Image (tube, rainbow, N blue to C red; front, side):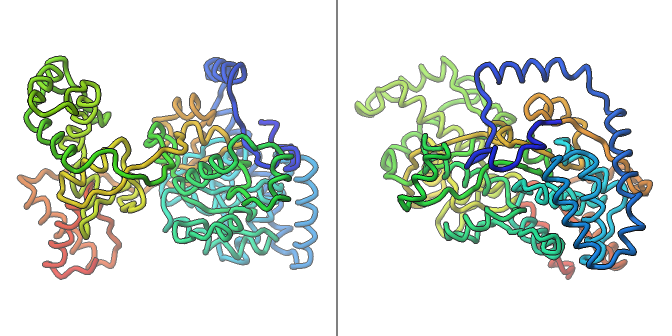
Length: 503
């Protein structure tokens, strides 16, 4: 596989990352275009099953081994990984040991399908595992092995709750292997403590927290990224980077992180005074409301884009007559009104943002949680605030920006786990160089399709949900009710409360 599998940390530099541009980028694109014809999922699965057999062959010896014997085994595993890197033979001994210690420390013995998933991630593949098949433990097998091979490993998931939960529950396993694990969450704000956690052997983190700390490092280092610059900065007492580079990454819920938000730019910015006073944003909203959809502007909801037509620009010119010199500048006027149209027709209250205590907070589309420290750029945030009658906040000056597509391609090795990958397999290969391996279920699925229920209206739909949840709760069966917006969640919560159902 990748040569990075046998490269040790000193050779990766003081801030390891893979930056591909120029001829190398074109060569990589050509290889990915041609390589599709040579990929064989069956051949990969055969190799993976051979790896699983090698792990299971060591099970009996490890089960009867004393703690002292396991410590000796651990020393041998570390030596093998240091010499041969992430080759199948050395990884098989490591995964077998981690599997045994997970059973002893956590009471969790990984089944063969979880071992197969761990192998796929170690090989820089995306393991497609169904919900409930134990991705968390499979990821731990791979992360622990990478950590023992002296790769600083990031386990990346979609929110801080999962970060904290997984890091806390798996900490005894990593400690028994002599590895330091940590969770980097939003509540850890002290830069020194945050940097210390990033230097653990295995770090659990959210995708957004990881990328923004990387952008902070880019701003702090500028062009001073070489080992000599890093040493000079250390001697001069300058702050160290937060991250320690991008060596090995494992992305949980890869379809959400790598595909759903892959083109959305993440922007690091600092506060400054608003671009314009409240009256300008109010005038832009007034002008936008006087335009007619279809004739003056086109809305593409799927792409979150509003485009003025030629007729719309002409109409704006007429509407701006008599409003002063500010509105005679056609380009500025068009940009402001386009943002106003986005605020009016693309961004909806309780779906894309919340208004609480007189402030607008963006809702994360992936998690449904608010992000009070984030804001839209180019005046859109202020346009929403004026639209909702909130106090105007300052603007933002962009310091650095990057997309997930560019960021995750910078890891020296990247693995992934997800429940749904086959539908986006081609894009995962083209953008990230990730091949998808379908991991069979541990047991046959007992899911039964009961058909679709169609309700006459929203009230009947809500009543049906409450009745179904009530029936399942009487059987002491947990229920997950998923809605598309915060407003819908609150309406459903009210209905459950009236039915006296705890939730």
